[in-house]
Image (cartoon, rainbow, N blue to C red):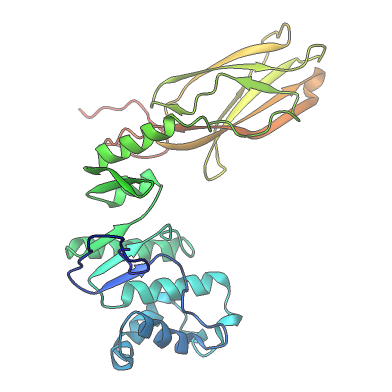
Length: 301
């Protein structure tokens, strides 16, 4: 409704200034037109005249870094090139209000930094940016106020910390922590909760079928970027029976994590490897003094 796509059943929405909705990348693009022609077409859809778009054209192309490709048809662009052009039109169009969906991670790392610079420029100039996201990391890092919707109704509006905590609590009630199918794996893990607090101890039971000659077992934790955060195994510990208990202090930054587990027989022969079939979330503490993917003991003296 803010973007003008839908009209409210009752009441009204008032905006003070021009608004650019950036909810769907490349809406209004025509693959048979060139990049140059699509810039003016998209600008017209945003309410700008041809003359106004002529004044913005060079900055749009420079930001997108597509100077050598603007006369090529859009159908010959890669998906990344199309995203960069669409994003550049949105942020370089001289509007007062931006509405973003889950589109902040576009292009390569260097282009993402440019996008974030634009975001902070809007913040610095006290222009309005509305971010629609499920990412508490983005809410924490980019927003000054937040609003939580549920079935189209306002649940809470206020500080970033209060709204984000309410969102996380609402997800704690949903039993979706470990939807990975364990039925095809010999390894079973029980005890993994959907959500943990930072520095909380995770306690699990790692089990396998009776009769397996297991000499070593191990667990690994991966983050959402598929990077191994921490991995360990039982080493020389003598394993008796068909199960072992595992505990680890979760000194991790906020976000989604995944568990993998493996069991080995004599001479480190691999018996079974279950790859990232259990998941959990570390609740954000919203402490502005610290950041990063781990939480280490520290002191300033």
